[in-house]
Amino acid sequence: MMMFISPRLGASLDGDALPQKIVCRSCKEVLYEGELLKSPQDVIKKYEGKCPKCKKELKFSTEGVEVHPYNTK
Ligand SMILES: [Zn+2]
Image 1 (tube, helix red, strand yellow):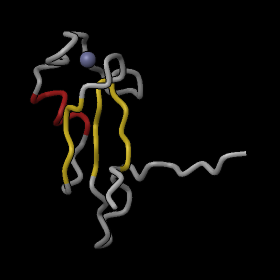
Image 2: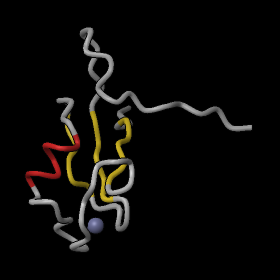
Image 3: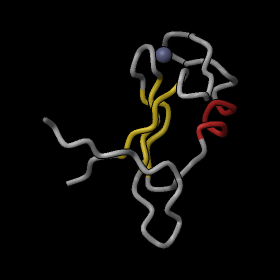
């Protein structure tokens, strides 16, 4: 069985903010990635509620976007 590592959804603001990546759930377009933790709502607002690539409506209810920890090495 694979080990499951749950993403840190902005919960840990105690000095160890992981880089974050937010992707469109339907086409996997990267909507945001960076070192700052952003709320998916902000990102959705930035794109006016639509994915710039597939034009699908973005919703944050774990339906429209996915939030992943960004793997750095
Ligand atoms: Zn998309």
